[in-house]
Image 1 (cartoon, rainbow, N blue to C red):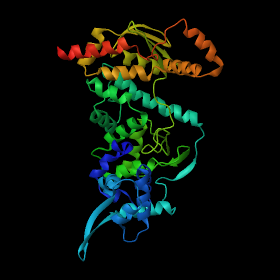
Image 2 (tube, helix red, strand yellow; image 1 turned 90 degrees about the horizontal axis):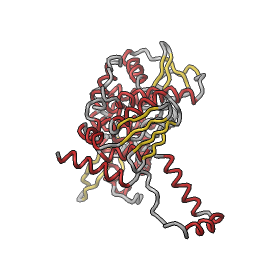
Image 3 (cartoon, one colour; image 1 turned 90 degrees about the vertical axis):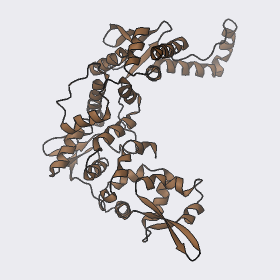
Image 4 (cartoon, rainbow, N blue to C red; image 1 turned 180 degrees about the horizontal axis):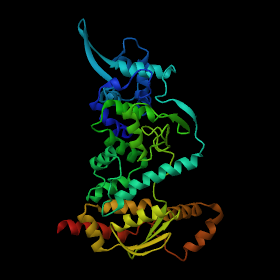
Length: 400
């Protein structure tokens, strides 16, 4: 299954294809998220009145793959079925496109699909203001995950609480929450929405898919159906929607979530420097108080905080701090990955050095300097002794 579909649309295997209602837009994000070869095949099938295409026709296109491997995703999602028909002495294989999906996608191509909500105007805020608000909401989730003592989630709506429980992000098993934080924002969104729609009715899945293709710079009228209002209110707690009593809009975090990474930067804007003496310097770029709290909580999961300033946190890695993290199911590779992915300043420095080495203008000067120094290996983002020691402490803790 395609990576972008793995987390959210896996649930469609358990649902009926009636969620693709004609003149609605639930089929659009599903179709766009498919691999290019599969989209081409489905496009050819849309206007076939018999809804079937011979296997030989697919093979003739020379996609470089067998028909089964190309169509596997669509078959898993029940959009295409395969059948064999005997004609005289030959057995021919055919692929059939689901009628609900076919009619819905045909309407979308012909411009007959309508927005699920009525558009009533434009947003008055700038894109940056809109992105900042949904970013703050998503960081609230990071804040919950980063705390050793799990925060009270009773103030969240019931379905949102259930989503957080089902996802296991707030359990004492730190590895699950930390793995979530290390994932891309795109994967995080798909994962949260997968748990949100688990055990939900199919009409909620369809509604979410239709909402995701709305224009984030437009304001829409709130629906009349109570269950639709509840979905919008639930999604607002994750930063996916914003609403008033009569109006709503989707955010850039939720827009086209199924097939397109968000245009909003979600994460902690920091530079981490790790020294060979196991000292960590974490510099915050923004000075944001919420980010400072999250970063401090995350570092505290596997290190000992020594000093804390407004834009700087100083911590030490030690055997006791790593062993404590390992006991709570945090893995050495996760700790190393977290440190590496935030060592932006060191990466930039390494890149700059490479550029200087390749510069004709400074070539002679560098050649002269090399006489007085040994040529060492490329600078590591995290010192090798620190990486090896973290791995050793983990192995030692597991052995006990």
